[in-house]
Image (cartoon, rainbow, N blue to C red; front, side, top):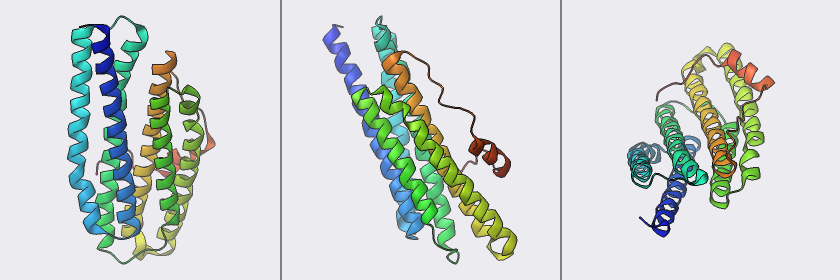
Length: 238
């Protein structure tokens, strides 16, 4: 196949990554709205729509593997673009799973008495969505500096996560009748924190596509040590 056709395939894959990212962004937004507004019908839509995101992810992977097998790109950046696409689509699909997990928790919480204001959760949701939107811009504009800046945004998510956990643990100690609801909210916070981490992964892969550098955004932080002590839940499947 001639070079023009190959470039067209790469551009189509890139467009599909942006489309997938936009779907994930919408899933996060709807899941958080379902939580804050106690909208169980909206939560159910998020859960059901997750299969469409899964289907697009696997379609993208299949296209990427086909390009690798048929085209056998010899230009290093072309090869990086195809390989990184697989990692990007995988991380985006997992972010959507976390959004669906939040929707599941929202439905459970909506069957319980309201626990209290969810301003910190709304702020975490806004922050991870801003990170995702930044990653998609960095990918579209091939902006390595913008991709690297995501690590600073993730620090705020980790700080909010630690604060939410402290507040919820204190609440459970002081008011044992809140333990079930507070535990659900701990899991919500965990899902949001994991979305932030996976967006950071996107930034690393985008830097790799642009520069060829295998960036590692993980640096020692007091917040991460604090979270290790406070969050015994692990990667909870919801």
